[in-house]
Image 1 (cartoon, rainbow, N blue to C red):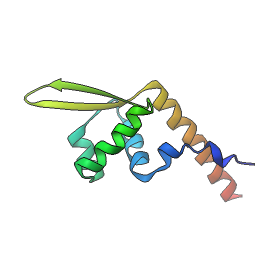
Image 2 (spheres, rainbow, N blue to C red; image 1 turned 90 degrees about the horizontal axis):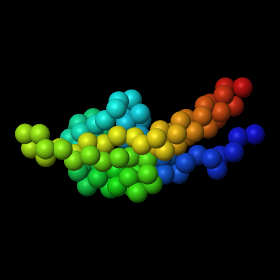
Image 3 (tube, rainbow, N blue to C red; image 1 turned 120 degrees about the vertical axis):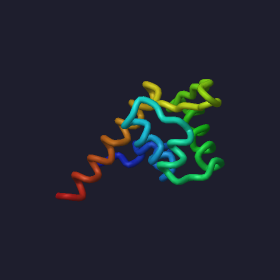
Length: 98
């Protein structure tokens, strides 16, 4: 039987799931690129990123290029949490197919 309590509620929220998926697909993302890709407002995106940062799932790097840039990446803990989350989803999908 599937243990649905293993679905990480922090990741499961639609906005954070979207962010985690993009961060898992690429080494790092600039804030503006995430905002554009996800079509989120500044406030909504930063709130979700702060939540993921506080959980230890996301790292933040501020760099000075032509203008200040903030880049985000999954931490090792974030990558493991996302992998574990996907494993539970796969179990759910397999059960639904049978």
